[in-house]
Length: 86
Image (cartoon, rainbow, N blue to C red; front, side, top):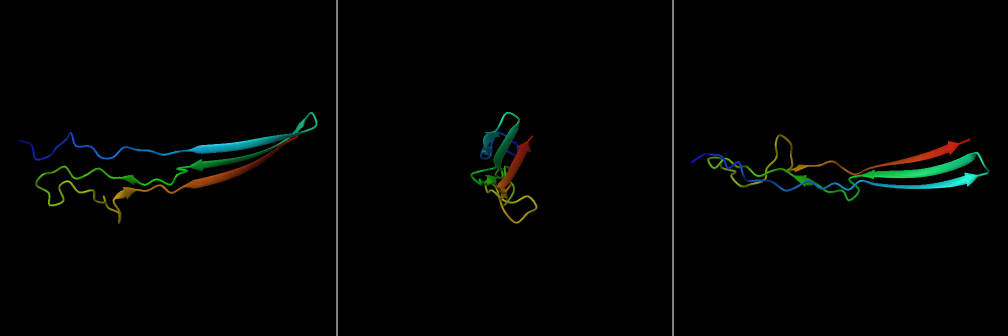
């Protein structure tokens, strides 16, 4: 019997990226665009996989891999653009 359970999987990945944009035309050749992009818009934390080594004292636990938390955390990032075409 192996000491590691390779078929045990951790939680899945879920990130929601969103973009909103609005354009206004001024005459025939001028346009103003306002755009906002949000990466990881719902601010989800992704959990690490559990320890699968049955000889390890932390078997079955979700622990950190060198950091202070048990998550692979990418915080929400929002960027805003204003574009003027003339």
